[in-house]
Length: 136
Image (cartoon, rainbow, N blue to C red; front, side, top):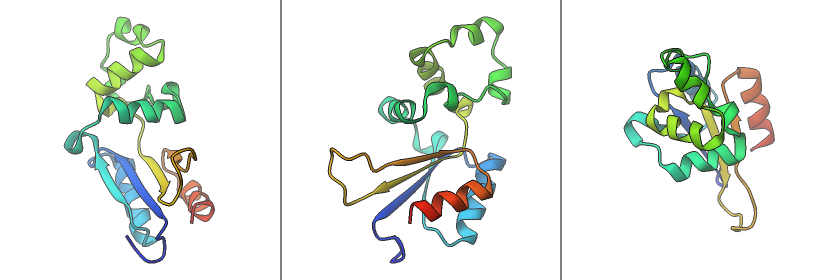
């Protein structure tokens, strides 16, 4: 971790061959912001981690209904995704259906009672600039 952000850890979640992930990673590297990349396909996705995403962001926001993975589902499969548990099962089975990137910052000095994690879903340079102004 860099000396410039000793109290923050940034983790970027997604799939490495995703174009939007590539843009986000390029932006972070251009800004010299240290981060850890977590590839769902390589590093896996636990039920507990996904549950924390659902609790902080909501299953509806996490579910990418505009991507290829969603379009490949049958109408019956799509109709069955009508609650958090059904969405979670699908996202664990097909992590490519999760919107990406998901950037999470964690403050390392906080107590367990404090919620120090901040989440940003998707990538737009302007949003990242604002996010990092607020989270440094």
